[in-house]
Image (cartoon, rainbow over all chains, first blue to last red; front, top):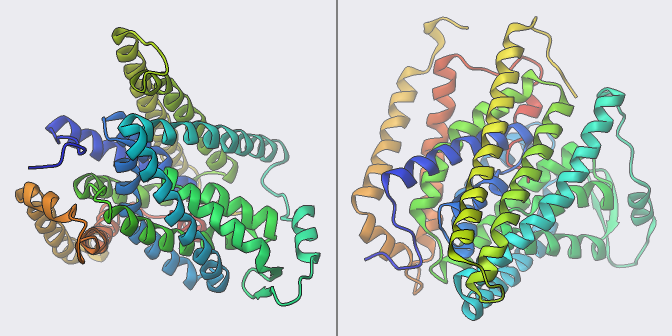
Length: 348
Length: 88
């Protein structure tokens, strides 16, 4: 008998997971993310609780991160030392964050954990989505030829000398105090255990706080994602929260999508990638925001009539489907258009 | 589009068969798998980790060969960014 905290898998659920997995993978291959920001809400739209969705997502994601890290290591983009130093405190962050999530679930039930995950999603996706949108619009105006410069905050961080804590990271070509990498890694892990995506903090943190080049930061994040995913999966598995069926079904569709999406990036201009990322992030944020009153109703914080709750759930699901459809149409459309153009690759 | 000669049909079929077997076993024994994989004692929490590795390597290889076999490939010289998946 399958534990009551796990959903029943009907043919419709399986089909939905395959489609969400495929489009989530397509989007993630295209925008250079693990896609969990689409996949976790996708699972929750189907009725999975927040904690099970996050646990199952981490489980499907870490071997993918390992494969990606190995590939990009061959291109010389991964700073293994930086990755491992960040990963050590990120693993601690995951452990603490997962423990907090379990405590939320114990005290406030499934609705509590789903509310916690959803609120974090809305806040993070809105902030990061708007930031990426601004960046994309700026790149669109200026063309894609902006030279990468170290942010002035990172220059200050690199100038701080704290004896006994200084570390040199050869691939990223930076020398910073471990007192900056430790909290950054910890925060990355904390976020990963809450929404199954840590890179929203890790990648911008390495770029704007430590001063690592963006290519090295996104490649190094894969090492951190692997360690965090492994630690998170183990921690959640020790609580019995990993639904291996959900994880493997998402993986089934997502690996098809991720490879197609990655191929798609070679057919479009870089600002298109950022634009699609921002668009999907903001639409998914709306989808999660719509169900927050439903969880508040279940926790009896808010009096919500049943038809209103049903309506909000349906609307959230449709908005989620719209996010996926928009992403898929834009990416596949760009690829088809790109294939018809003369063979002149767009490079960063 | 390439011609048929360079396409990895053999590898596609081999990795596809392994993947199909793994997924068939997972769903043929769904109840038992879920009962075992959600046990929290002893070394049982390692099972989801081991399964994720096994499925990922076999299915990951299969999907790579799948798009190759269909002739869907990255544009030349732009492949570094195409390998940038999974970062966030």
